[in-house]
Amino acid sequence: MPDTSPIRAVLFDLDGTLYHQAPLRTAMVLELALLPLRRRSVSAARREVRAVAVFRRVREELREAPHERPLERLQYELAAERAGVDVERMEEWVRDWIQRRPLRHLARCRRRGLDALLDGLAARGLRAGIFSDHPVASKLEALGVAGRFDPLLCATDPEIDAFKPDPRGFLRACALWDLEPHEVLYVGDRAEVDAEGAARAGMACALIGRSPTLQRRGDQAAAPGRLLAVSSFSELLDDVDRAGP
Image (cartoon, rainbow, N blue to C red; front, side, top):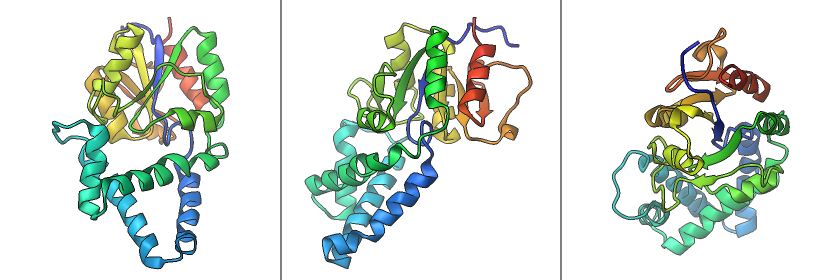
C-alpha cells in the first residue's frame, strides 16, 4: 500500500455519478419526442432541440479553451451565436431541458446504496462535497440527499470559472476543507474529465460503474493520481476504508 496520508474527505461529481445516466436519457428522449405536439410546430421543436445540442457542444469545447469572459455568461453567448438565437432564449431552453425537466426523473435513476454510502462516510468522520460542471442544489433535492454535502461547487462559480478537467474546482474544495489534495478522493464517471481533473489537482479518483479491468485492484488503496474502478457505492466504501486512518 502506498505510503500516503489517509483520505479525509470525498468529493463527488453529480451527473452520471450519483444517478444512472442511461434511464434519464431515455426519459428525456421521450419528452423530446412529444415536443412538436407541445409547440404545435415541427420546425420550432427542431430549432429548440438543435439549440440545446449546440449548447452542449460549446460547453465541451470550453473545457480546455482559454477565456477572458466569465463562463457563466460565455457559455450562453457562444451557443446563442452559433445556433442563431438570442441569448435569453438560449438560457430559457437550457434551463428547461438541462436543469428543470430532468428533476422529475432523478429519484428513480439514483444509484443504489447512495444513502448507505453517505451514512458510512459520516460514521467514519469523513466529509462529503460536490463539484460538478452544472448547478447542483435542485438535483440533490430531487435525489433526496439535500443537506448531505458541503461544499456544493459548480464550475461556473465565480471562484472557479473553469470546467473540468481544469483543477481549479477540485482545489477550491480542498481550500474550503483546509485539506491537501492527497487527502481527498474524487468520485466521478468520466475518465477524460473527472479522472484527468483529479489527477491534475493531485487527487486519487474512483470511477463509478466502470469495469474493474480499468485499473486494479487487490489491496491497494487510493493514492494521489491513482485511478480506481468501482462497480458500486459499497465497493467504494471498501476503498475508502483501505485508505482510511
